[in-house]
Amino acid sequence: MSYADVYASWKADPENFWMEAAKAIDWVEAPTRALTDKGDHLYEWFKDGKVNTCWNAVDRHVANGRGEQAAIIHDSPITGTKTTITYAELQDRVARLAGALRAKGVEKGDRVIIYMPMVAEALEAMLACSRLGAIHSVVFGGFAANELAVRIDDCQPKAIIAASCGLEPGRVVHYKPLLDGAIEIAKSKPEFTVILQREQEIAELKDGYDFDWHAVQQGVEPAECVPVEGDHPAYILYTSGTTGAPKGVVRPTGGHLVALNWTMKNIYNVDPGDVFWAASDVGWVVGHSYICYGPLIHGNTTIVFEGKPVGTPDAGTFWRVITEHKVRSFFTAPTAIRAVKRDDPKGELLADYDLSHLKAIYLAGERADPDTIEWTQKVTAKPVYDHWWQTETGWTIAGMPAGIEEMPVKIGSPSVPMPGYDVQILDEAGHPMKPGELGAIAVKLPLPPGTLPTLWNAEARFKKSYLNTFPGFYETGDAGMIDEDGYLYIMARTDDVINVAGHRLSTGGMEEVLAAHPDVAECAVIGVADALKGQMPVGFLCLSKGVNRPHDEITSEVVKLVREKIGPVAAFKLAVVVDRLPKTRSGKILRATMVKIADNEDFKMPATIDDPAILDEIREALQTIGYAQS
Ligand code: COA
Ligand code: AMP
Image (cartoon, rainbow, N blue to C red; front, side, top):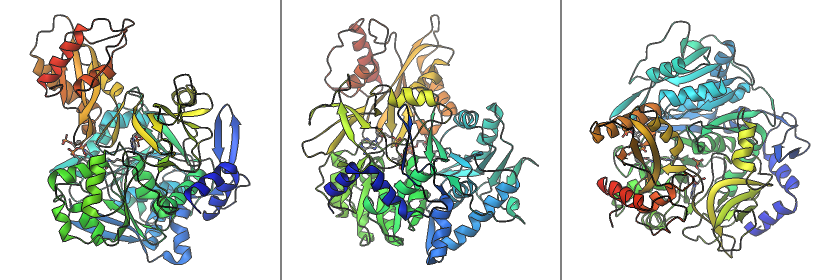
């Protein structure tokens, strides 16, 4: 069947399409229907099925004869170690950890926060939770204590599983003090923690509260898989919105299993037994879907890579891992490729490696610029597929259905909508636009299986953020267009979310931190174009009356403050002091115009601007930090 046939078959009978896809999952009780319409534009998938995620990701492969196959390969150029865990070993390790959690009171529906670096145990912790029907929430290691505390208060975990430390090149990230600090700040106190001691740093454990990962498992009864309802949340993953309060994206169990399993062949074109590698982090959605669950559910071998694209030890690391572990499909972010290209512009390091097992390279997480795609194609001689998705959807909205049909690549486009997604371009009033016209990208409801049914404990916010603007549609927050051939083009966000090195960040969240500085009266944060990271945040500060301290003292204080409050991942390094911010007559800060000035782009003077002269002051301020030069 061609892509067009598959897409048409979904459109003609979505219920049948997803019920067929659901047959690839082991159900304890098979669902009798795919979609449940709860009314008011709210939906669930496979609601009346009973199933366990961990069974499908681990135990069933052992039962089906894959016990000796590698499930996880941990490769850490930072510690110089490589470890392989077979499916049989994984089953044993996860069942014991789940048993230990259960012995300490963790049950179906309880939340567990996981705060871990790129070690195999991070996946084991996720799987142990899903074995019990507990709902995990993984928090990225680059976030500071305060961000962790916000997540603790929102999901109120019974326990936190963490490691003693993470390893960044040249720096040990001390997780335990961050964890202790977060628990101290949080109003909701977890009952206990489980700490994986790494040899690079042994953390001090509080007796009766912090339990050693290994000791806590001693003598416990391994846990069996607990069946849960199809709409039971498998996990909560927090992502940035317009404000500093992160949104808890809920991932329902049944749809998650069905959809991810479907993508492994149809999009990533791997068969069970093949090695699949997503070079991301378990703290992000890519890590959830394609380091942990997708490959394991499908019986692939997944790689947990603790390293960076460059500097660990060099820009050949990606090619080494692909060669050594015989990776068949590789997934990374354009920013990582840009880092490799910067260090090895001619791709000379590739000469040392053999990519013959590799079929294709997949890029996502941010816009893939044509330069990056063309360079990657040239040096690797492999197809390079951009694909577009979001934390909210958990899997591809538009991409190349390489396992169905290798359609022509159009550089600059992540290709075509996947079955399940009726993607439309709408104008401000919600009317469909013509091919080639730029508008808001929306998806006709219902969204397909595996996508978010709501936000954790925040249904009103869910509706306001995604459903209210275009009734009957999910608002993606991205703007773009569809061409005559049905290829989608993603141009920009329509909100104040920025994308720094493939990491989604809220400028509103950073503004909240800047505004809390005692000398700052008013502020704005914008994302300016950056050749490596895609975007970089820049802060503008208006100082309170009477403050006459040196400006660079204040700017370095706010830089430190963002690192402390949000974390190093915000990459907030640039701030300037200005007298005034450009605003509309109604007082709205003209952030989009400021971005255009910074990026040397043409812009139309906003008709509602209060005082056009302020834009010259903004340009001059940007020039002092190396932007708005031409
Ligand atoms: N724990 C703690 N700190 C972390 C971290 C983690 N897991 N990940 C990143 N950080 C820190 C870094 O050490 C850095 O700190 P610094 O300011 O002290 O140098 C800061 O956060 C910014 O990190 P990063 O954005 O990774 O920038 P970098 O300059 O260290 O590296 C790249 C640049 C392009 C190599 C890197 O951003 C990269 O590998 N990007 C790909 C990311 C990716 O795969 N994203 C896909 C998500 S789907
Ligand atoms: P996240 O939820 O962190 O995955 O970020 C999702 C956002 O990243 C999207 O809404 C887009 O703005 C951006 N994004 C992700 N993938 C792509 C892509 N392939 N092309 C353009 N933008 C992308």
